[in-house]
Length: 121
Image (cartoon, rainbow, N blue to C red; front, side, top):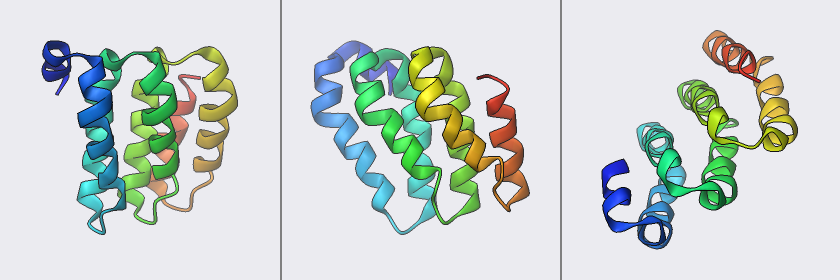
């Protein structure tokens, strides 16, 4: 996905790819929702700040409250991977509070990965 965006450009990705990828968050099968997270990690380094901050990050934050623990802990892992690409203000005001909430999740894996991600804040 990263190579495709490099070849076809960010404008193409924001118009054609990102909206379709993000639609996967509505799918009833949790594997589709996890694929959205994997795609976000692949796209984030090449799409630039605007799509990352306005489309990709909000989707990851949305998936931190998914009913399936595997999606939630993968969302925490995704946030950890995105942090080097994010502005400190976004991390402090949006990511860190979300991870703090996730660190109290009843699922042990969600708790673990949220705590690990918090160490990067």
